[in-house]
Image (tube, rainbow, N blue to C red):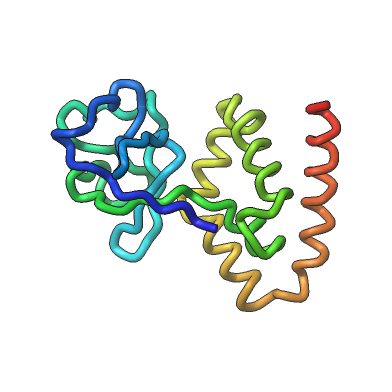
Length: 160
């Protein structure tokens, strides 16, 4: 399940320095966990430490023609999905998908090469791969699931 949020206008944003966007209802979300559909392509927002124009009302995005977009043009944003895992397990809410998100946050995002892989994945490769699997290679889903199950099991065992 994709989590969608309505962003309040820039003038009402009060925690941008902390990397947080204020949404309708007064809740906050981490900028780097969200993105937006731009010109037909889903774009992930840059990491908080890369956001250098928030005070000017601009948010930096990855892998797009436009490097920055006005916060006031965001309107609805959504949390980025684990595209392949969601395709393989059938739901973004599956426990395995939640574990893989945690692996991404706690392992991959802790190294330069891991962050580069995540940026590549969320820059379009993940969605393209998931769409290709779903449309052209659905018979490979059980095999991919077995491979991801191994990763989920090993990571889960390390956490204990």
